[in-house]
Image (cartoon, rainbow, N blue to C red; front, top):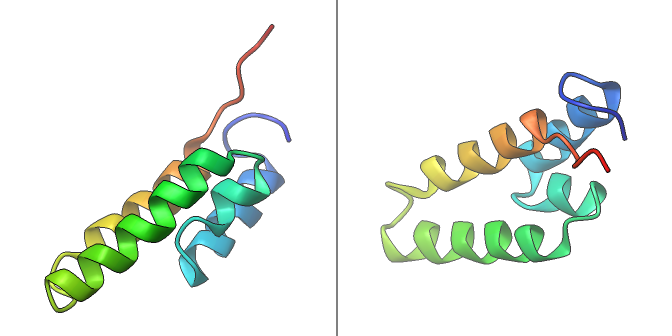
Length: 71
């Protein structure tokens, strides 16, 4: 995938909109995908959805602005 604003990042952000962490998984960031997915579920369940939106939005924004390292 290219850098920020690329079609790949838009697709990843859309995937994270539906399932937190799926966009990160699409970008090949397995650790971050697992973190986002489980953190979102823990917060959704633990706070009865009150703060779940924060983690969910964080997942979407993280997928949208991800920029791979330049080597």
